[in-house]
Length: 416
Ligand SMILES: Cc1cc2nc3c(=O)[nH]c(=O)nc-3n(C[C@H](O)[C@H](O)[C@H](O)COP(=O)(O)OP(=O)(O)OC[C@H]3O[C@@H](n4cnc5c(N)ncnc54)[C@H](O)[C@@H]3O)c2cc1C
Image (cartoon, rainbow, N blue to C red; front, side, top):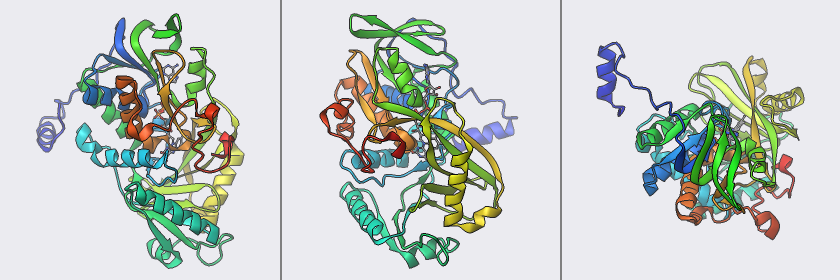
């Protein structure tokens, strides 16, 4: 059913009895044209664009838990396209454009809120780097604005301008950046894909692959074998484990990233702010809680929970930026498993196994990439060629040396 003012009115007057489930609870069929492994944002977006843009509708999304139970439902919901490097920026700007039309495309309120993002700088060198980044963004068609200290003060007078250990000198603003409601993005893609005939199969874990020679021709699952002409992996933090079942060793590490939400407040932070002298980013949810996060935990893990030193580190950064945060009570915290690649940038590519395709390496930044990731992965699965904005996301770049090292820290996933 389509959501509209009229359907809202009708159901409001008839006891809300007329709503249909947003998607079917599909049972797996013996075979599909395409199987997407992983029912996070990327897997569901891929299925949707395969069906809507390429007319391929005999598709299953296979999810081991429930859709959105991975990072898609655990992130701090920031969307932006403020990257520097040519391999990244056009892709993330394409994602931003897709965000801007997403709710119409899906007929679903994903609460896309272009409330703006501001990256603070605290030194002359950082200002120069942000000026360069802002220019790169503009060259790719994105918006950017370099603010001085007074420009930042006008936006956020409550930041610590006077006694800070790292005085704020200014910031790089992207006014089209902001947030989107992460669960709603998952549900919106799921519903729209289901309407186009995609089977969303939950509680079905991929446990192995069916091979014919080198080629992958299906998956083994906890609910039986399912064959497919093509299999796409979009399992984020589980990438290395699942790919290993196909005999692949990925240039990837898995790390925990934690997020935090405070008790509800009246509106105070109306955009997204990132601290430039540590790793800390903060916004306010529509329910009033301050939502914030920082660095990944520095060790490899597949457990979706974090540790206390990082909690302390994140809280310290928050205090350095806006000391009054110290009076807040923390309501909840949680962790997700990040697929940290060796250069901090993603992979959307074929694999050495014919029939097996890979979407991975999203590190901290995969939520904002969800629409473009789905778009580009669908393009690759449908045409066997990379989409124009994703040509740099090659799996073999770690062998050839064509790295996309946005942070310039080398092959150290824990630093990206
Ligand atoms: C705390 C936190 C904060 C973040 N903040 C931001 C942010 O503000 N902005 C931003 O852009 N990004 C952010 N991210 C990153 C972003 O959430 C991820 O990069 C992105 O969600 C990954 O893609 P996905 O949604 O498809 O992953 P997921 O939702 O993790 O989807 C992968 C799915 O694969 C399933 N799966 C795994 N193994 C199997 C199997 N064997 N068989 C079947 N299914 C399987 C999992 O259950 C999971 O549902 C954050 C992440 C975390 C954890």
